[in-house]
Image (cartoon, rainbow, N blue to C red; front, side, top):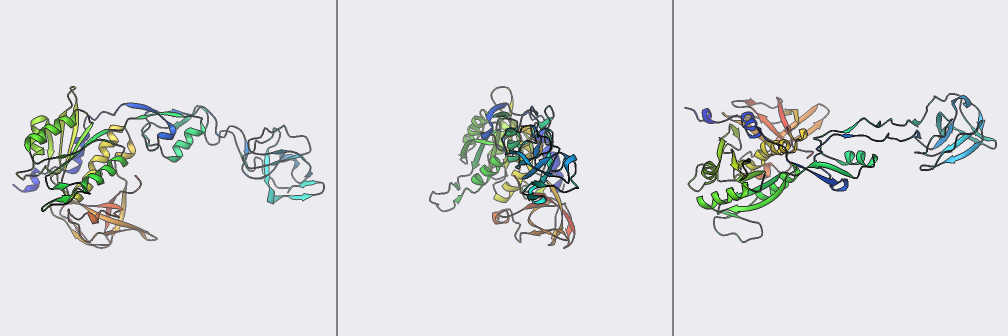
Length: 405
């Protein structure tokens, strides 16, 4: 039987990982602490924005019927000032954001008038409502303001502030236990002994997970010991929503994670039809309260870890947060500026994208080996190359966009 007969497609693996995922509980935060958090409820506007008709520029407010006349200035209206009703046969000096006086129905910018000894001379052709921002032209009271499931970016926080809102209900960050396996792994800053390497996956995954909305509540290194691995997985599952390991899910004699997972909970999938990242395990662990904690066992190779995080951890955090934005990576069509030939597994190649007048062009990193983390530094996207394919320069390929999080 060919090896690929036992390998699971990426889409099937993702469906299995997300099956039955429940969103995390909510919490209330001050808006100035809620940047990038996921809104848990729809928000309805309670105020019109702008709250009154106001001037779009510095100029003069007048009645449309007085176009072509020379009018004296009867009042000055700065932003934040209370405008009086417009006196007959007059205009108002007004500044950007100033309230339109009752009775005025147009504004002429200051560069479009002539200042004379008798007043302000206006042109004949002034449109009604010219240079006026109407009340409620941005937001109407009672209309939807923000939708549940969106991440609160700068504009959304400004939208909330425009309603006078100071607190917002958001999803609690999913709690993640991030465990590194292997006696050969040493944290940066410690001296290296023969056969040891620095832990590149932990800082990389920590940053990615935080970007995806997670809260890293446990960091630990698992020794190459079956009982120690089992005990640490059990403890991590009791206080986390997701347990993630790096390494230890292959077939070596010192790879104990898969066996520990099977003894404690269940292994849903192992070995995927993807490159890099074939030895990737998905499963569930009991949390001690009758529920289940999701488990993702990423390969130890740093590129496999990087790719697996984007393909599986990002949508998992999206499901836990109820955030549609995180559910799928944006897909862009690009023209390949390289050649490639794949075997029986789908290949996720690290590429940079150039946006040209002729379209998007993808350039592949020369060395696509799963141990070459430099192929991920500066990568804009993952080019998706289907199994048993030959890509020639100029072919159109799909690329999963990695920027913007």
